[in-house]
Amino acid sequence: MRDPLLLRYVRQTWDSLDPHRALSYRRAVDRDDTVRRVQIDREHEAIVVALEAGDPGTAQRLLAEHRAGGRASFHHYLKAES
Image (cartoon, rainbow, N blue to C red; front, side):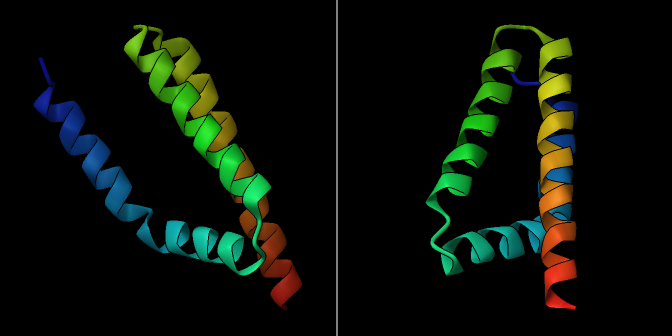
């Protein structure tokens, strides 16, 4: 059974991240950064696995780590562009 509130939250979060996601993937493609793209996919998969296993604590930790890595990468990119 799907939780409609959770689905709405995920959709809203996904939509709000469109600009960052587009820039992140464009940078990875522009640099042919296959390693980073694979890392992102693995991080996403680990978060989904934790959710499917009913382990919200691990999912929350993995999501925080994923977001921190994305933020660091984004700030590094901004510094390099200035």
